[in-house]
Image 1 (cartoon, rainbow, N blue to C red):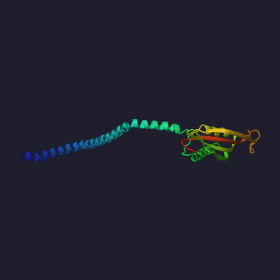
Image 2: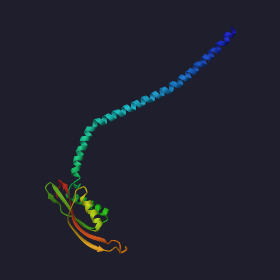
Image 3: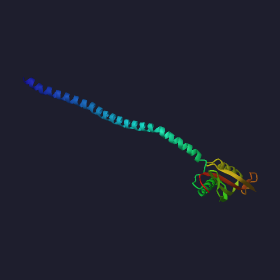
Image 4: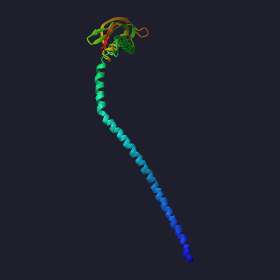
Length: 195
């Protein structure tokens, strides 16, 4: 009996140790699985919110495309005209645009005069008269910059006078520098404004 009663606590201790090992194994597997499951649930909620946001954006797409088409239609016409609400602002806008073109090409503007506006139907013609000094190769850049820009601008009454000089610091074998005095009128249009 003594042997039986001594083996019972050993058996209980072994069973308790086995139960503890099984509990540790179960907890070692179950806890990470539960944490992973929670993470998956959070990811599912996040993806569902994103999906609802995408569905709202897709639903808004036809209205946005229509609005973009209207803006493009209006923008294409507006880019042809000076961005000004009246003739005086149109003159200033035109003057600043031309000054930028001339400066970019390396010319020197000696004078600019805003001419009186002229009504042409529903459009108001805004003109400036300018005088500048420029090298011959820069004049091409200036004329191209004026006539190829948006808003649409036009050059008229172009008068050129050559001031032919040899560059002082360069040897005679190099090309001569042709300096030009240029006078011209440049005009553009604004819509719906009275002079």
